[in-house]
Image (tube, rainbow, N blue to C red; front, side):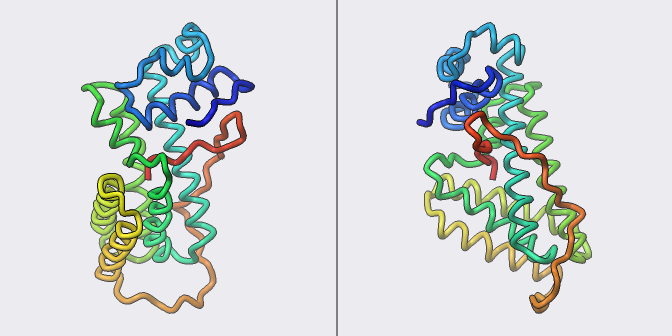
Length: 226
């Protein structure tokens, strides 16, 4: 267990503590008292800043979402030259989270499994899912897919399945290799054989680097929603 930096603001400390506890143990299992004890703040501070546990969960999930978007954008824009390469690159970037000791699968899937009807968790999950589908759809369109929405839907299924398999089977190398093979086959079926790689990088309108969010310790939040 890492130590929450006590030099930061109460909000930053609460979010850092919530991120570790909610992701590691579950949003319902972890009570407010655990979070404030971990963060080293008064209960009144939590309610003054967030208003309720639901709002703290929302903030935690949005922080994870921002961290995932930043990590994905950084990697896709710097490592891969074309939209087609980036489509496959999404799975390579995703697989880098599997071997982390704290990996527990998708933060949004875990939270929605515990959510009650009408909770803020559902809204946070919608924001994340719209981004994920949009990422694949935009890249597929830029790559020239005749049915970018259809290809994106297929790739999202592979992406989701890979996260679940990595969490349940604990065989990161096999899951990473298998998801990449399946994704590559779907991409080739839609776009045809890949072209030579000796072309200049292509800018992507669908990928923008979001502003980086950092904790008080100077670390970006873990991207726990692969």
